[in-house]
Image (cartoon, rainbow, N blue to C red):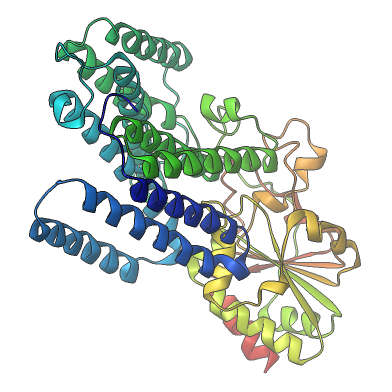
Length: 470
């Protein structure tokens, strides 16, 4: 902790309590049933940490603090009320960018006025250990900020979801990373402004260059990866600020984000390095440029779907991003309730990377008050498709494509997928036969003998099925 004044025992105890609250928050968020309790624990921990920090540091006057909290709280409240659930992925990316930018600004403030942070030696120079913390914190924060901005633009449709592959991008990226690390090492011997601000500029650049080549299919991994980066940036700044709560919180966020990235990569049969290297397959990834296969397929109606599901013993519903776009989750829950009233067992199958961010489908179903005990992850429900009468796929594509198991030339080969093709009948809700998934490949499930295509907006189709069930 450098040569700073001893921290009072009650402050350390308060930070310990806040750290325990953060751990309980992560534990609570591991299950839908306990997620609300986890959120409350996290809020309590943050309140304790912020309150303690404000009590022991003369950062600003009470009025200034209250004004800042009021402004930030108002922005957060308005954003939370107005944001659509379909826009949650880009909102998360935007929040990550703010965390990264905050780390950069704190690092810059500490560099410009190190004595105020207690990180100088007797000669007035910045302590060497603080230079390492500062350099790494600013570098990770800048990468998080610029990378999150690109992720936001891709998710929000302001930039193409297809990979933008620059010539010699791997050489450029490796060169920039090596330059950043070399400059941080040089910063130990020379604290000149040009060294510090060059590290910052190069880090902003590498953030852009790392995310631009990544296609839409890999966005769930990108979101969790940027979450991890934001945590490590906060932890590094915690050392600079001598703040135990920031160190604990940053380490928890960084490590949990890294674990989640690993889980996402396993769910896609990808390596973390292959994602960072640039997208699902290089030339065909994420842009949806591939053409649909010209093969015979069967078209059905809402009445056909209602009849088949009403006669079934079990229906498994597979939601995807198409459901999110059309906001069909409430109508879907109504359809499920009606089927259960008619004696049909209804379950929901969730693929880990369905949607645009980890847990996207779970959040949408929870919003529609779908019972938690009806929602199952891939590994828990995949074996049931073979004994299921109807698999109702609504807006999911790549995560149901049998080519992942059979076609070694496919860019999604080896990715674990939901075995919906094993159901007696597959009802597939899709806007048209002309589009493909984020991975840029057509889904051969469309052309199976047991598949019936329901071509329509997802919400409109489900509402028509509900009417037919009535």
